[in-house]
Length: 319
Image (cartoon, rainbow, N blue to C red; front, top):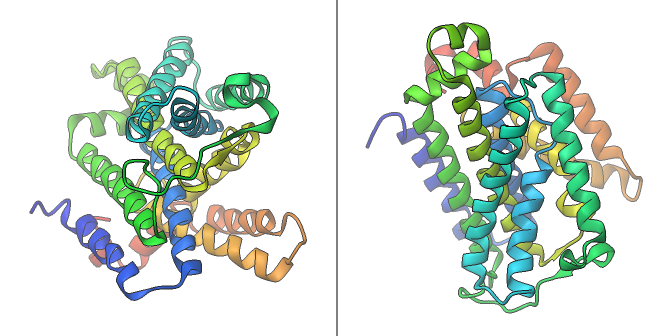
C-alpha cells in the first residue's frame, strides 16, 4: 500500500464502519449530505484550489449531472446506472466546453469566476422553461427501490455509495498530487506566465482540470437526483451548490485532499445548528456560513487543514 494513499484509505475504511455502529437516520442523513457536499467541493477544489481558477458557477456541473441522470431515466427509459454514468460524462463535456470558450479567450481571475456564474444562471433559466426538464414543475423520478434502479433501500446503502464516490475522488486528487500534471496545476496557480515560460502547456492543463472538476461535481448531482428523486431548476442549477462547493474547500483547506471533506462536515454541522437555533427563521445558516468564512479568512487563510498543520507540523506535514 502506497504511503501516499494509506491515510485516505484508512479514513475511508473508518467512515465505512459508521453505519454498523450508528443506526440513527438523522445522523446518517447528516453524513450523506455532508459527503455529497464534500464530493462537489472536491471537484471545485481541483480546479480552484490546485489550479487557481476560482469558479462561482459549479452549479452548472452539478445540475448537468443531476438532470442527465433524471431525464435519461424518466424521458428515455435508460438504465439508471447508465444514466448516472452519462451524467458524469456530460458534466466533463460541459467542463471542457466552458474551459475551451473561456481559457482560449484568456479569461482568468474575477473574469473567469463571473463567466462561470453566468453559465450556471443561463443553464438555470433554460431548465426552468424547457419541457424536457419539466420546466417550472421540475422532474420526478419514480420510486423503485432496488440495486438495478440505483435507489437505496436504506440510508446506510446511500451512505456507502456516496462514500465510495468521495473516496474515488479523493484518491484521484491524491494521485494527481504526485504526478507531473499536479505540479503543472500548481505552477499555473502560482504564476501562469512563468509556467508557460517553463514549457507548461497552460491551456491543456486548465482544460484537463476543468474537465475532471466537471465530472466529479456532476457525480454529486447524480447522487442528489438518485437520493431525493426530484429536481427543479432552482435545486439543480441554483447558487446554493456553487456557494457550498467553494466554501467547503476554503473553510476546510484550499488545495488539499482533506479540505473539502473537513469543510463539508463543518458547514453541514453549522447548517443543522442554524436550523436548531433559528427554527423557521430564514437565512440563519447563511449568516453562520458568512461568520465562519470571515473567521477563516482572517485567522486561518489556509483553512482548517492549514491551521492544523501550523499547530502540529510534525504529524500533519504530509496532509
